[in-house]
Length: 375
Ligand code: PLP
Image (tube, rainbow, N blue to C red; front, side):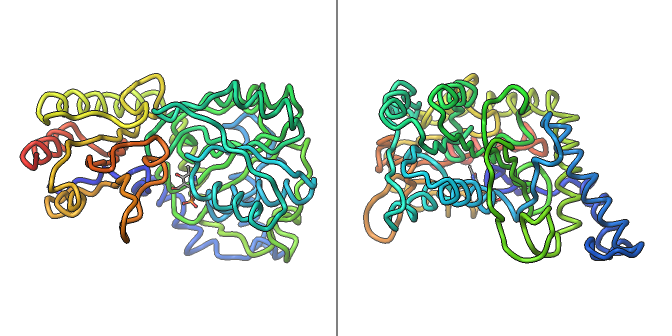
């Protein structure tokens, strides 16, 4: 048995998505900027995809711009807004993805920005009173806080964060890469300036994503060049990627409740069996609490043992693909900034299991059996 439990890193492409993409690789190859029939046909597929995404998120197609993925979308929101509005202060959390952290840090290093980090508890739960305190002293800040953490799965209350930002007139960007296609986002209700999506996290193709920009914020072009994406992002569009992205999101919304229930069932099974069979097991962050974490992610903390250093390798030779994330700070083994941030014991093993609709209860049982035999 070969088991893939690294779906927070990337998910397998859905065959239905591939079938939708294929004609745009073969027959419909025109350049969408061309005015002839070949071009027009492809242009209309891009606009249809934009409309589909906007419809699912309850917003207008004019507010959706395609990008090369989550990282580019996060960079666009951060660089574009901070530079064009001349914002001098940003608030984030030390537990953000590097697409956000390194981007904000680069601006701070350049002297363009003062950066404040939000306090959090020892499970990574954000201190929203601290957010209010920070905004009370610097109201016109840029706030970037993710919807769900990609390593420990913690869900942050972006509705409340958005309302706090609104009260103080702050700009709010939420990295929604891990929740897009897994939870519903209603942009008529969510007070946010930017959210983002990346197709490969919900069974779409790699290298394509999008950014939602609230019309209240005027963002400069993401990439200078031609007039593509209404002058916002020059360059010939990734047509089959865009078509696949929209199809993947459509399927994700269509089947969301059923998949959520199924995957939460797998996660519950994993928690239950690990507790039963692996000595001294615990869970990092809020990942074992159903109402506080992604149903797709479980970050497991394993007992202190000699095998921890080689843990991912040992799982790999047992045909189990997962992500690590040790809190190790020494030598060349650069640990996870998230596990370090929540002061996870660096001597314990850490494995992130992330599940999708394609995983089975038998795979969960196999993984627990292997882990039990290792410990
Ligand atoms: N933000 C989060 C929370 C992520 O998990 C990821 C991917 O791991 C990204 C951003 C980057 O997305 P992409 O791989 O599409 O650039």
